[in-house]
Each structure stands twice: as structure tokens, then as C-alpha cells.
Image (cartoon, rainbow, N blue to C red; front, side, top):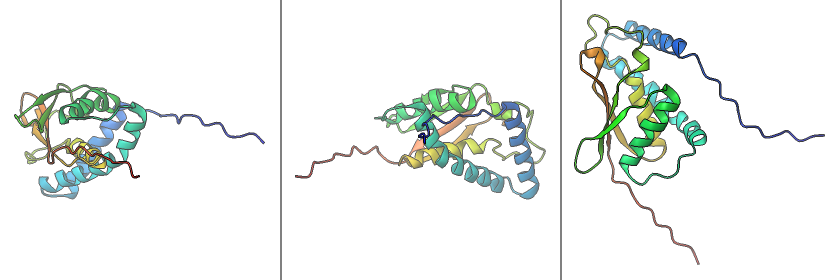
Length: 181
């Protein structure tokens, strides 16, 4: 009897257009199911959080990134590796305060809104891509980093750019381990 060979799992890519259209249909259905934009936003964030908690394992396995030592390094990895790996874009990163715990990801192109011209009528407070905030928050929480992730600007709402704000809530802790004798 031969042993099964341990092959690396194959990662199938979904067609980007199919994903974007399916996401649009999901948001449209949520708008029908919930009267308030806040409820839709919460649901999208909750869905994204669930995705992020599972996606982080795939990300760590596929990206082979090492341990990060600062919030700026973490945010750079999110922008340059994670966004590129899963959405095919690389947002720019800016630091928003002197304590270096607030950052912005500025998306020149947002693939989730590729087929969306404007928000539905009467839905001005809808955060169409709030799924992304939940994904980032869920993934960070799985690596023991509490963060507040929100949309600061959105082209669908008439802003000049799409900007996601990440505020890390705790100071990074340096854990020192002692050898037991």
C-alpha cells in the first residue's frame, strides 16, 4: 500500500466579476430585508468579521509573513500583501496620529463597487463595503489585536477617495518568556 502524498492544497480563484455581482445582490437583498441602513451595516460587518476570523489562517499559511513588531508594519502587511492577495489591489497607507495607532488605507480602486454607480435612493448612510471592515477587524482579532475599523470616506457617497480607518485599541505587548528550570 502506498502512502498518500502530502500535496499543497489547490486554491481555486473565483471569477472577480461573479464575486462582485454576487456581493451586489447580497447587499441589495439586505436593503430589502432591513429598513435601516445601520442594520444593514451591522450585518455586513458581522458577516465580514466571520470571514476575517477564518481568512486569517489562509492568509498566514499562504503569505509566509513573519512576526510584526509595530502597528505600522501590520498595516503595511494588510495593504501590500492581504489586499493584493485577495482583492488584487494595493491601497496606500497613512498614519493619522503621533501615537502611531491610527492608520488609513486609501483605496484608489475598490473592486467591490466596480458595477455600482451610486447608492440606492434613500440609503445615504449605507456603508456598501462594510464587509471589508469586518474582515479586517475579525482577522486582527484572531491574532490578538483589538481594532476599530470603519469607513472614513467613500466614493459612493461623493468623497474623492475611499478610505478605511484602522485604530488599534491596545498597546502592543512584548511578551517575555522565561525558561523553566
